[in-house]
Figure 1 (cartoon, rainbow, N blue to C red):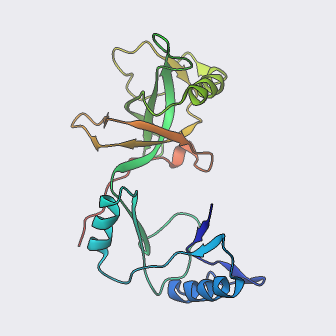
Figure 2 (cartoon, rainbow, N blue to C red):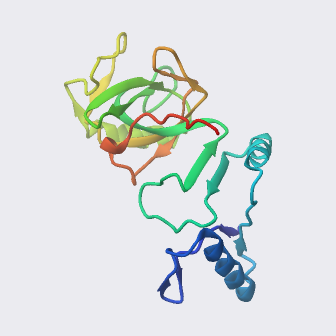
Length: 212
């Protein structure tokens, strides 16, 4: 197992986050070369030709690419235009608002009912996620969700046709999917895990930026 390092924020007790991306990476490269560790590896970067890099990343089965301004300092918290992630497949966080019971030999849960906040106030239903769980994960999710059950549907518009258990919308999960349907729901969604670092009210619908 090796660890690929792509940025450096502190060095010898000094904050270097205010330096440019290229300066930080140059110091990181020098540090790892002097360290000569077989476990820590330097993650190189490509200057320019982002479209080709992105296409090759997707062709290699990778998640996508990250583009950073060469002269930009590191910014804590929410990313701005100096740091852009381009994904080969769609993936974002959603808030869990309910779940269905398993069927057949399946254990734990059948599917998660998820959504996102619009204007930080209204929880909009986005569809059900019924794949991506191992048996252990599904069992753990059921345990967590049982403690959050409530009578009222948390979504602004109650999903039609689902015999669901509603829960307090406090858990955030990562979901991978192929596209949004015209009805505003997810196509071919797959559960990727819970996100403890994201607050539910911060979860909105992500929209791809226009390429220039």
